[in-house]
Length: 206
Length: 103
Image (cartoon, rainbow over all chains, first blue to last red; front, side, top):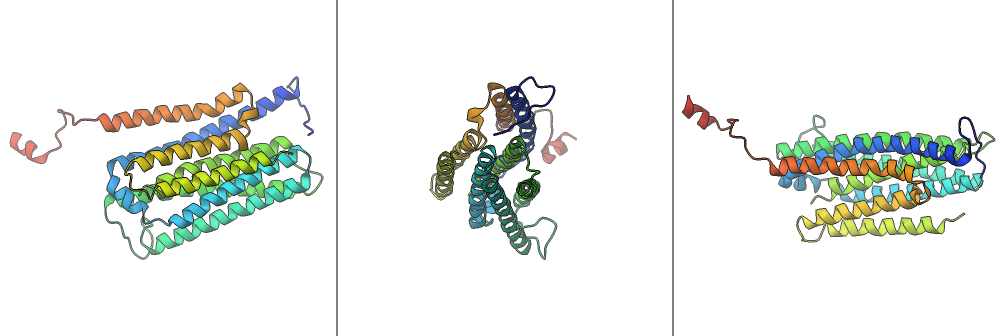
């Protein structure tokens, strides 16, 4: 593992801690953003428990469950990729990060197919051939669902781009540093944690 | 390289996922919501501790990472206290008939 010290840090350990602290603060702000969305959904559930549960059951549970497994698996690959980069095994790191980016694309494809399904069933607020909301609470649930999942999908898209870029640069001499790979990995793991909380709130509130 | 621990964590995460889906089908009412939340917290803890390597970080970095979780719990606690303990204010007239009777 080769980490180059740069100014103004007196030693590698301090430099590494500073790198990691900056990333942790950024990720904490991301967690607060998604935390507010999740709490909005929980508040809606306490107002409208019946509508919330009934609309939750209309979501595609199989697609949501498969997507959770896909994200967890991609997180494993990212963790392996970061470990491989730290051990200077570029080839393994490249494959692991590339496959993780592919799994991110699979996640987005499944999410997109769910959106198409909801569009057809009249569950997309303000769009589609019909609107099929039994109660105002059902409509609000789907509003929250699209806000939460679209914001998450945006983060997945950014993560896929960064993972793919990392895998690409690991081909040649201009390989990203261990710190860069680890920080991109941290971002991806946070996106995974956000989904770990969104999944039960949206899909399992039956 | 130590990949064994990562693979074991991944298996544990998938087992927890299966448990949380299974618990939502049990006829135990709102308890399944609590179980879901506890399992989600356990999954997040595994990802933080092993995948995100918080077990190897310094206290400063761990503190920065845990701050958002603590703040979210405080925020959620206040949100719950607000909505659950709220009572109708005697100074706000919401019932149309009571307004009519006073006029």
